Length: 233
Image (tube, rainbow, N blue to C red):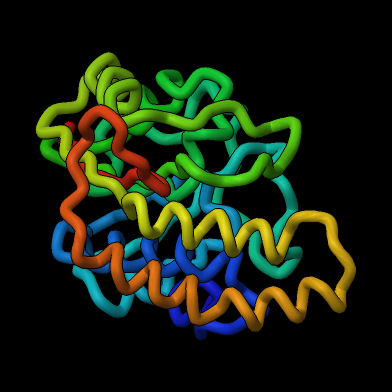
């Protein structure tokens, strides 16, 4: 799944480059907390499976997705499916869990979070990411864009502790991401899209570089691209 773990910056992927690399960078920082049995909630194509198995202490990787999940790849199937209400696992089954870009699709996110909390072992760790600045996707199953404050409340209500939430990007990255989405996904001719993509590529690259120099606090007026974090059962 190199599209997720080894993305080359090009004029053709200006829409996906920043979000994919920022999620992967956030996950890489957390590999030290992954161990034992891991549950991938809303696993899709399980793009991080091989990386996690190779770079962490995870021994067993289990993919779980909703019964009527969008079919991303007919060659990749989840290990288990569920109805969105009760996961097919006993209490205290997993040492850790992750959900990347999943919670925004959950009609009632606390149902999912409480199930994650239930199947985690005591002191088990849950890693998550959610978008903030992103186009409508998997319509009509695109439910939320979380602020750090609402996300923290949902996690607290679900019984988690030691809640750590950070932004994947700030003002500069937000502009870079919007320019990438606009030039690659908004309606325009192929000729115009190709020309503008080449024109915007160095600008987007500059904005991403500038964003790395910024400390992102959740204060009035701050812009963010997305959120990631960890919690403990």
